[in-house]
Length: 297
Picture 1 (spheres, one colour):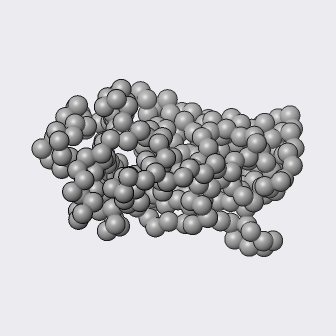
Picture 2 (picture 1 turned 180 degrees about the horizontal axis):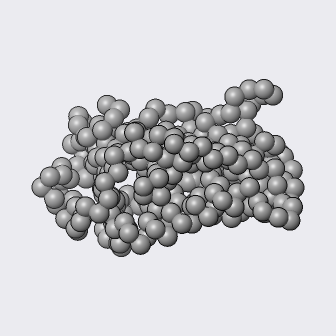
Picture 3 (picture 1 turned 90 degrees about the vertical axis):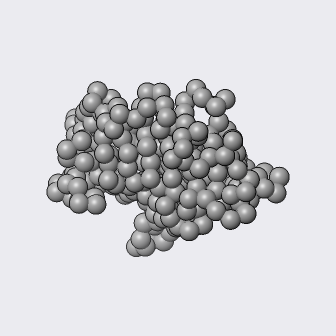
């Protein structure tokens, strides 16, 4: 039931390299990501699963209840509840992604997210290379651009830059665009992947109640595709559903081991901590002119 990802994600930053590329007037050369010929969800920038390269198709699911069905129903229930009761939320986003074979450091961001219109404000907390950066994206505003600025040093002298969310510079160092951040987007991708994977067998699903994410009680759903198949986006994935809000607050996905008996390879992980819902955010919370922010004219 997971995998997309974003799925997540959780997902998104103006990396240091993008700012430097802008300063130098250069654009990084895009790379076509490897992706299974079949499969749902978005194509991640950088690395898709490699352990199923050249693998055959998964077996068709047998008649009867699929092990993914309870997980799919929980995801659908959470998505419906989220859309009906949560208008906006603040949180701390923690992400870690593997891009072009390299697993990056954890990044920490304070986020404000509003569902209608979809709006995002990010303030980067760590590591030091990105600390102080701010990013704003509002669907239908700023000519479709995200607005961003560096936190300190020479890079900050550039002021605010406008970038298309899916442009090569904005995507440098990111698996997914800022338009995919947030628990609603994560929930949607989980449903997409679960509906796709239900067509096939070779799927093991386990529920682990009373798991915790940053002190919050969650239900952990673990999905394993034991045999590499081109139909699947991951070998192993875990989703942590917050028991109170019924929303996904953590997602992690792994590639198949590189050698027999080896460990699964982390591809991506996203965590939403300190979630506070229905803050009553207004347009001012997503306006670069907000005096609490440090966007330049």
